[in-house]
View 1 (spheres, one colour):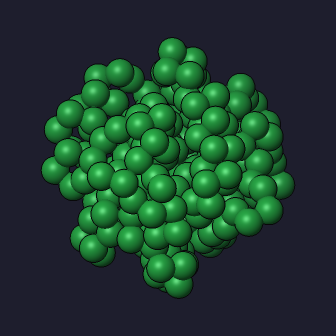
View 2 (cartoon, rainbow, N blue to C red):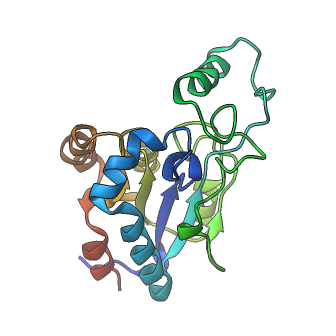
Length: 211
């Protein structure tokens, strides 16, 4: 089935240094899968071709926190979770994940947004819809078909794809443009979860199906 470019959007979740660059708090865990699947290169080719076709591209990076996480209640589970990231993952360039003023929350240079792309701020949870204007901007752009890419496949991508399905969007997950910590987790999401809420395909096949 061919789908129209003007009602299609690619949502790119958390293409940031903390996941994707050496020194990032979570890079060590995902590095092998990034390399073996060639995800960064796949995303670069996808985004370049999508822009030529006039497909909307929406970036949803994780929101940066100030040092000490003053946005969250002291001693609460969310704060303790972030401190756990600090202690367990030993970020090379900060004292924890997603810290404002460090390179961690910055979008990696290879995936720098281009004119016409939309960067949606405010993501503080796994679901890209929960604390952002993503739903509003998709509807304002009259988007029906949403293709999800990004990180991690079985966490933020899956949560966001489930939410999109519940909101009535036609969901596609571009498997070769997502990654997570292990092949087992990736495979489970691709085989068991995503086919129940939409379509799983490659970036090449997706682009071929957009008019």
